[in-house]
Image (tube, rainbow, N blue to C red; front, side):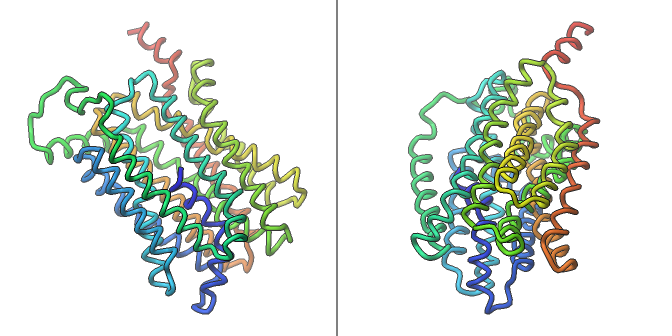
Length: 398
């Protein structure tokens, strides 16, 4: 939750960060490119790090991830030169976004399969609560303390407390290892097992379809979080606090979507309608956020976009537990999908940042980015239906 506070709240702080670093030639477009470069670094490192850390006890793999994320947050908050800003953003992008992948090791050891969708929904709910806090509280913290750096100091403190409590509390519950869970024995060394898991994962078309489709939604989602506040304030004359209220609707209704979608899928028995349909609805909703300045309408469109942006998330990640992958392979599968999520975030910073420079304004760049969810909608049409009614039909036929 706290890491997502920064992931989503960076756009709220961007105008103030740019103001502090404008003497070094940093503007909104270049700030986007810094974020883009940092997330491209995550793309490069997330799978190797996932493979390496997944071999370690989750008590230590999650702790190491949190520790380096904390260092990244601290470096950004203390940055006085552009290189420190780059370094902090890279550490933050790589390790804060690696947290969900590392949590797979915790979940496969302690969560029964029939509860996995609900647990994934709760996890996504926690992340969007971080977004809500970001959009509503960050403007207040900047106003009270007079600097965006205070946000990072507070986050570092909270994350340190989280890390300490995690180290103390992990291991108090019952849990089983990958091999025990599958009833297998360790026939080879750790390297051989991870290589087999990697081969198993990369040969599964559901993993690749999901991963390749995912940037279609994350490009416009993160571009909105990163650039829309600046666009609203500088090009539309909307107050920053009002912009924060509008953007807060995205995570508020994302939280609702994350919690409601597993229940809806369970009730109707099918997952695909709740996944692919949003690829064709979201472009309209995001586009309308660039058309109107009417606050109630902006709140409405942001709320609907937020619901759609997370409605499918618990379902596509739960699919990784339904397609017959071994538990080590699930960790790698989630890492691959998170890599593609990161590619979308990187494109939101670098490609949309370049579009802003090309068009000399944010509006046209955001409107072009609104088209990207169509990519998600088209590709997810080819996913197999893994809802319980469909799987029951297949079992009956078998």
